[in-house]
Length: 88
Image (tube, rainbow, N blue to C red; front, side, top):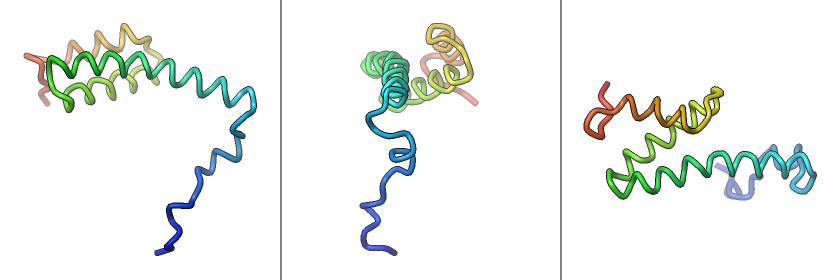
């Protein structure tokens, strides 16, 4: 194993550039969009568990990536719960 494995950079860092406008827009949009789900998850963790909240945030974020807005994605994920648990 290469002893300098920790020095490997993100390959997209150089392709997109860290300072160009398009890259900054993508970063801002991504962090703002996902931030909504993260804030929700942090509140949810106070009344459930961190594992449950992380599953909800991941599922909501996945659905948002499929085109659902946050509110609809949250409602879909909440509909999958029974007594604050996800059953298979």
